[in-house]
Length: 231
Picture 1 (cartoon, rainbow, N blue to C red):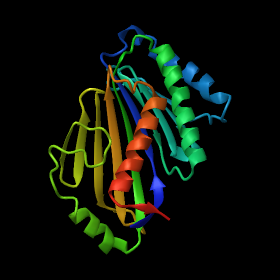
Picture 2 (cartoon, one colour):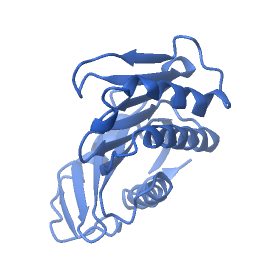
Picture 3 (cartoon, helix red, strand yellow):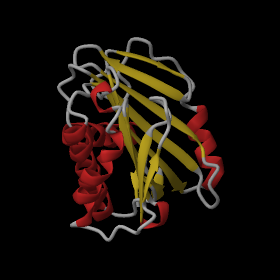
Picture 4 (cartoon, rainbow, N blue to C red):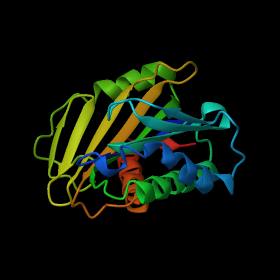
């Protein structure tokens, strides 16, 4: 089935085992290393960095917004995340990964006692399909099965459960992949495909580069097994 990717986003999230308590009193100082990390690469508008002076772990945070909101970064005492919208090219993807690593380096350098409990990388995509919505619905109907003892996408999972959402696990390498296939709610697109990977502490995929490479392999395998071909 011929498809074309109309839009892809990327979300990266890291949660700590326990909050970086040693930085509670001085958390506002994280603004400077974040600013320094990005100022050499991009012009940072005066209102791009926002400090949330909350009095709890959940409410104290710093956000950096770039490119009219298409890139958003958030740091808190219990972890950090980055979001990139509408990645249209391989160059945009490489840039997003570079910016995520810049942010990660700045945050981890400041919150030195924050030990990751898990990393999560999510790629939602919206596609057009030859045959339109009828073809997309036909594909989705064919996926409502339960391969409890199989690895349908050949991604190295040791256990799989599914309906239109497949949860795939690898207990040795400590990762979980969730594959969601659905009708698209975005205008002028037909199919929604989201691949979400999570790596817990102790996984060999313990850096963004390794996680991105793994997710790329998973993506290509899933797309192939779904019978989707790029135009």
